[in-house]
Length: 323
Image (cartoon, rainbow, N blue to C red; front, side, top):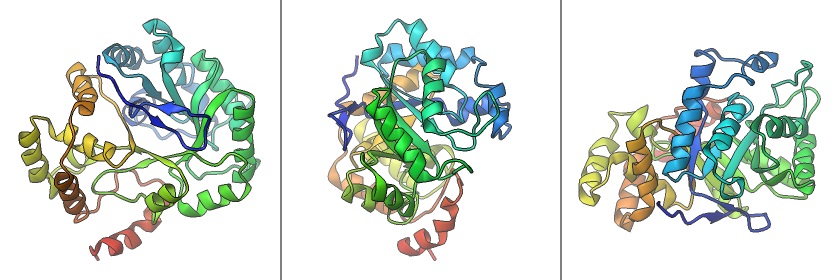
């Protein structure tokens, strides 16, 4: 089995995070929801439904050596992940589970709620006693919970031992500054879209993370060969894949890891699972990392247009000299 060297999550009591995460988001949530965009009380229709395909794919991932599982309230895949863990027979303490709170979701009573009740429901649906990482999912707020109030509830979850580390997803510098002004426990992670064609999800976010001890989790790391194929990186990745005896996907994942970031991706293919896990067994030369960075910056592509992030597109393109 491939051995991953974990990263230490900042602002925690030495919590270790595996660098390869298995996601239950985009592909799986759209399958369950049949492609519909579902919010608010409508999410409750799906949270108790178990997708056997996702359960089996997750069990397969665990048996191949994946130990980091990623779910979220808006995905409605919490129960599926919990069922996979239960059926796998793998000890809970050997796994790392990330979950996320969505401010526009409601409880069974139809009322908007905060992160504390969301996390409690997550534990019930997954059958777990604690979550390793819990994030504010996007900058949405509801009428009852400001970001400051939400963050205090995340801190309460840590204090009560229900969550080991807390952070955010799809947050901008402006919002993180607001949290840091009132935080007793600073945000430790920002899970964002990150790949060579989008090296800053919003203006200055990577620099801010580095300066403030925030670990980046990259979702969509394979975007250049999945959603943006035909871009300027194609020949570069093909050339490097031949040089290292790897696939273009492995080259992309390794490029992200060599930034010091965690990756989150998904697959139901056993062959690709092994390829994903194999990225820990080689290193890219510095000049090749720089080549991917430089060529990637010559093209702009955002796969997930989550508000308010597209508002930064023009500024990000100007930074790259693309407009």
